[in-house]
Image (tube, rainbow, N blue to C red):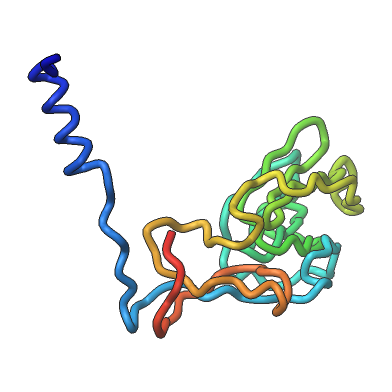
Amino acid sequence: MKIPFIANIVLVSLLLFGCEPELEFPAEVMGLRPVYGKAADLEVRKLPPRELCRPGKIYIYGPYLFINEVHKGIHVINNSDPSKPQPLAFLQITGNVDMAVKDGFLYADHLTSLVVLDIREPENVKFVKAVEQTFGIGNGLYPPERNTYFECVDPSKGPVIGWAEALLQNPDCFR
């Protein structure tokens, strides 16, 4: 039985291009190193106001501003008088970069979980609940960035609360 010409082309293409070459890891390269924390870093806490250092997203809720401090949490500011904004609190939410508000509740990412906060009284924000493992970024085993070398996670060192750029020696992981 003869194999049609098109089938031969497909078969040869699969043989030649179907396999990826094995990735070679460099001896030294810029990449990402996990930043390990403690159990306390995983708690969502209301803290006194602090200086805004690395702002991210901003959400306006009535006269209040909710300003993300990238990977650290959310600043709560009373902006009733825009010429004199009054910082009210800092919500420690490790790993936070995004938030949304609906019907008086603030939804924020917290590493791989989603936390829900009651902000109907912004002077007295209350934790409602956390939905664990909402964001599937490898349960903290992989950095969110792609096409990068990184130091493999060692769970015995604690939870990964972030990633830092570093010069890596003989990295074993790539994403």
